[in-house]
Image 1 (cartoon, rainbow, N blue to C red):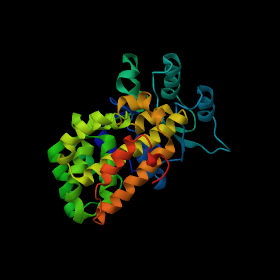
Image 2 (image 1 turned 180 degrees about the horizontal axis):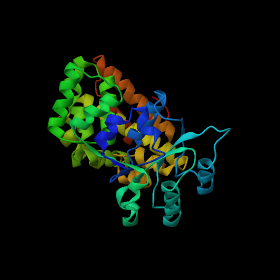
Image 3 (image 1 turned 120 degrees about the horizontal axis):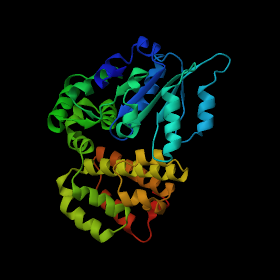
Length: 335
């Protein structure tokens, strides 16, 4: 059985949808949409929609032997719904194919779901939809799909927020699936009365930012002050102070968790959370940043955000930049 993404979103909350689908393979053509699946299965579990208790096993962090043992047994007759996240075919092709063959031919008592990329399956598996349920994950979300996402997650937006969303999609056309989850989160947090004040920032988050801003981020994390301020002098007036505070808050937050995951050797999670960070930072530059330093940066920006909303941010970003590039950086130790 093969199901398109729109049909999936419209039926996934129906308990009957899952009852006769012991194996569900989510099939996409792009990188694993971590935010979407994390939100989806938390939501389904909280609503008791899944046919059995949810258990999460990450295929990148569990040995093949332990995976087979978990799926081939039930504890005291109690079976589970296993979400296995992404099956990657990059580390060991032979090992990955063995796991994939096991999953698509699984006939145990548990329910199993996982994600794979289109091009990684190979032509010899083109008929697997006759044996299992395959959901085609649509990575680029248009307004219709986004409205179905809102309905799925029971987010009822009205009036100004609805107009705000339609305005965004008229301008961007489509957004990536994980960015649609970010947009839902922003809509939850934003006050309808101040929506337009955030339009510029949200728009920049949902689409690729200009090359000059990417360079700004790169030179910041590479600690190249001269190149940074050359770009900064060209672009800082193009966007509001609120945009810049939000922009750097997002970068620092991602950098913090990227460093944290790398230290824990959870490299796939680091790659996912590192979306939008400069390549050189993710390659080796992250080793120059301690978690304490990034945490202090984030706190400083948080305080700036509060000050901005109360009307006092005189030269706050200048102070942030100067102390970042200074030889004795007080933000590394304290705010």
